[in-house]
Image (cartoon, rainbow, N blue to C red):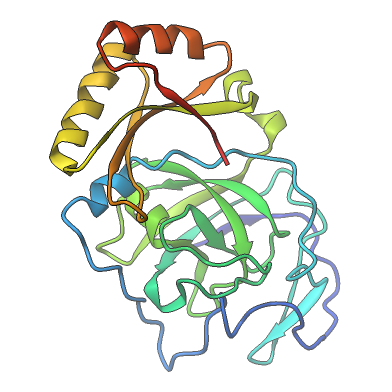
Length: 267
């Protein structure tokens, strides 16, 4: 049975949905709940998605679209919560993929199957949440920027990338716990302005992957391999790191003959 704690949602007022991209980032009604399509798997895609860093949790203003206070989908009304503070929920998560890639979400942002985002029926847009896969205890943080899911008893729809990080992209659904996070609820390191440090660029994924594993062991920082579509190169990046940690990491990389690394602000 789903457990839910989100305070008082208030009395429902029937409004016609406006500003929510049900025809874009939302979900048109299928006759039965069914799984969206995954991207075509390049040999290194899944491994790269598994290593995606969590998005930076920020205090952001409410989006002008998708925040109700009440909206109606397929004849059913949903109220948007006044506050997400202290919210947690357990239930079934699903994921959505290429069918909606590039379309507008309910908040107006474009849905990107390779970013860590999610859709929820009641949370204010945007809200950052920590999602835990209760089957394997894997976690990730995602940004809620869309409305849904409206099929079955699912409580949240995650991007394909988030499903990969949580380890259920092949099953389609999993039981999860979601908890709202804010900058104030994170550790000082998580709150600090952070950067990624680029240590090299390679034309072959195998060389980049080998380098990033070696650098993780050498420096103690988590690494990720990022492919830039414009030139096809695989960048090896370490982080996130704080401004105070950058000089030490630069010195380690230069001592290992990686040259002067490039500092990249996190989005």
